[in-house]
Image (cartoon, rainbow over all chains, first blue to last red; front, side, top):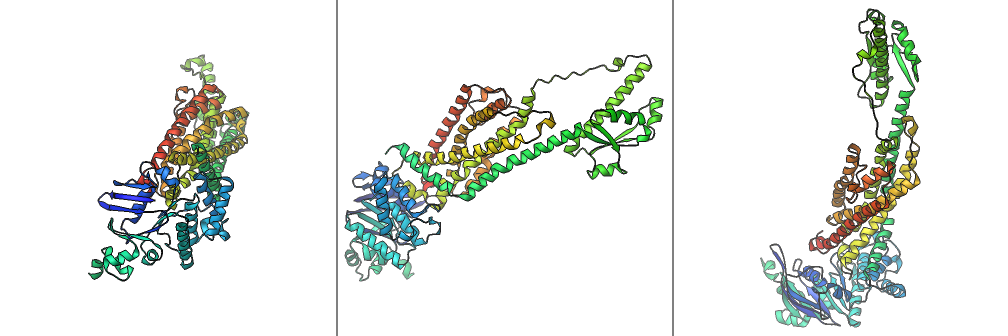
Length: 244
Length: 392
């Protein structure tokens, strides 16, 4: 359960996030949709507790992120914008390192690592150092280390970026599975098809503001457009740019 | 979960990661090996020069002009008079000879008339290695000259002491061991270099490298207090630094024990107890130096930038080392609690054969580790800055 109210963040003269409020319930998939530079990543960074908002509140499972970031991080799995791995560690070692940092150890850790490796189809490469991994394999490792502590709130920043068709499908399947397990899944994307294929609710962000919030059907209704893509373009204020 | 357990987890990960970085381990070993070998070679050459000056072949030209003088020369201990080359100046220029004495034609005539008899001393003052031989030759000529002067005065019924208004008596207060310690300061310097360079790679990799790869943000998303991360990384760098110090010490001592010190009139005596004392000084220092490198490289966005900082940082511990060569830091116990300076001062005493008491080791150790902990705390604060977490 994620609740964001009146979020603001300014970097010098640039107001990256002006007014963002939305919530995401357990057992649903919420898509944060917006063009590049709309403020999606900044919003997620504040949600992760690593960036302090100038104003507004963020509550995850009724804990305040600013007041208790470590408490929130215990129940949150985040695939951030930067997916850096340690080139000399293997896939399994990555998952185990983060598992241990979350206080998981022994047979539990071994079992969870194995389960994630199977689930993300990393079995063949699990004991290789990641320096030679493909973009897709890297993303999977980054995702696995974010999920090793079985978080109830899963936040994914552009999860399918750089993935091929099969990996994208696997990622979507995983996101649906997480919903079935009762997780609250929030993911950001600038790709229309992805959001429409997965989300129960869509939050559209443009220029640091939430411009729409609803089910895909509701968004089509609001804008009076048949296609979700047209609805998105209209909501993001991109129409004027397109015309000119 | 206890914070120490988290420190341990981070420490073990960085250690494993660092041990797999073959290239940087190799570079540490090479740095640790090259310097002692270089200095060992230098000392051996120096010893060779002083040996040469003790037992030297002295080329003398114009032997027929002063048979008595040449006879006197060849009677001096360690001197063997040989024929001078045809062109002495060219021979010295070409480094075929270090020094040549040429006795001029008028020598005997001038001697007989009691006017200064001309002798040429051919040398090249730019040649460091020949300096001892040249001064030995000059001293021989001067000795012969004063001997002749004394004889002349006696012949004229004057006491030779009349012509010696001042008598210099040299009193050397440093023990031979202390003079050796001056040379051995180089050992301390090498150990400090090993302490800095040993943990440097892993310090950079685990901070600036973490930022450059983009793995810092995911790491900070785990529910771990920043201080545990900073401490784990610092300890991993320190362990590498300690290994490098021990390796460098074993290598340096083995090299120095092979230098023919006796040729310089020095007895090299560094006991195993002295080595343990040096380790007791240096190992705590490693923890301080790796805290400095970890802190500094956390500022850097990339490996390259961090290496730039390290280039400057390495001068920091070298500076007191160089000072100690010019102004010996021995017998300066009040420097004990000052990081780096204290270690140089106490190490000079250990090598000078005046080992300090246990209290001094403890004071020095506690002081550097306390400074290190402050730096670790500062590093953990850096890890909270948004500019550091996201600034790539």
